[in-house]
Length: 586
Image (cartoon, rainbow, N blue to C red; front, side, top):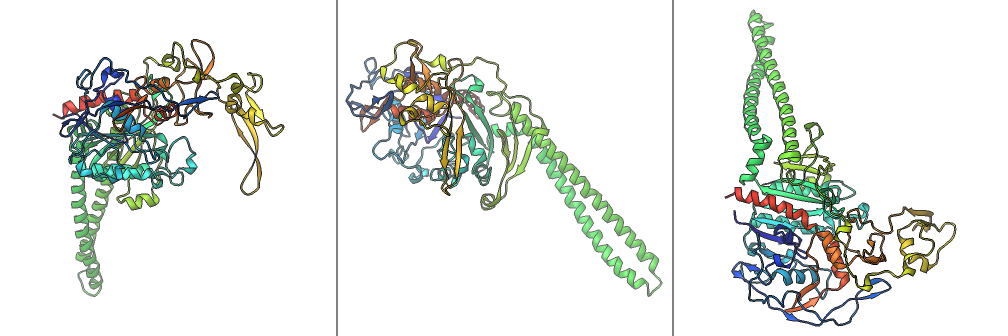
């Protein structure tokens, strides 16, 4: 099967980098992006635009000009193909950020590295709202990938305020469903925050249930796994759900069903259904005879034929008992089949499924599996469905099987210290001493129920990351004490980084601050370090191609892109598994 890809909600190209094992510029086809009509190169023109400055140790957008040059163009020209051929042919992608009024940095960064793609009508719709795109004009492909918008579910807001599929960006799921219906790709790989499994707060599991039902209705089988990148040796504690779907008519899907025993049980289930139907027919006949016999019995009280009619009643009653026994056997068979299906699901989750070989987990038994049938209609599901999805599971024919898994990885571990700069770091990343502490560095908590701190004291990282108590007043006028615990002020070298958010680099509790390896001074992460934490090549987000000109992406936007990205290393490992699957489809 041809390795052709459509990448939705593409960002700066995380899936593309992962599938093609892109670790640096030498792995990219600069200027060699493809369209359905062949290669389509985009020219570049240098610009002196650049927008980043630093104030008080916190990088912010400013307006000073910088000389922008492409680091590779001294060695390679646009006309010369100089880099490795990508293993996966991305025939079309889409990236549109509605919040950006004048710039589309993610899309333009993607185009800078990979060029653009044309649709079947010869138009470039890669930077058009996906809801407005004519799905029939997307070039044909065999693998759909995407990290679909997750602001409605993300850890940046509380679960109680999560609106899920009803949210502004949550509705973009329906664009994915439309692509499935129109293009019918054999395989799908999606990524989202793990909180999707519990969304929305008012009806836990509804949103994911709707997505699974959409796959069911479109003729797909599904497997999912929540993966913490650090659990498998990567340098970030980032937990995300990956959803893999295969069309039911693929060879891979048939192999998986055989591995789980679903095919054999389907035939046996049909045989049992036939037996049950025949027994039910006999029971109906017997019941009719019994009714006739009852009438005859009443007549027999008047005539001398009672014994014969009573014999008929006894015979009919015996048939009814036989039918009841047969029904009991069918129920037993159904229970046994349900247990066998749980055992098959456990085998897929722990050993034979898409994720198990690449991201091993501990043993999963049939007794650990929770099963639930999805309602037939999306309307019923939306109105009343609730279910406790675990971190791994499969869906076949509308039946959901899920279990909690534990990672089982024994390989090497990359840490934050491994990806940090070894040499000199620009001064703008370092935090001034007065912004670090307002009192002794050993103090890790503040209690403003006793004594208020000044505005300047609250602007220090010590205060921000320390434990605190504050007097607050609710909208109702009720006074209460707000409290939160301390988190490590300086992130440690010997552990993976914490989850990066889109606010990385701002004055926020979630921002990483580190001890510089060369000077020992405290600073923020560089843009290159945030890229390496996610597994992107260093300086992947440094440049964009905007209206034919190469421009530099502002520093705060570079960090935002990484907070919004997926872990490339996870996709790279999944890509290796997908390569084997595609070989077997030929």
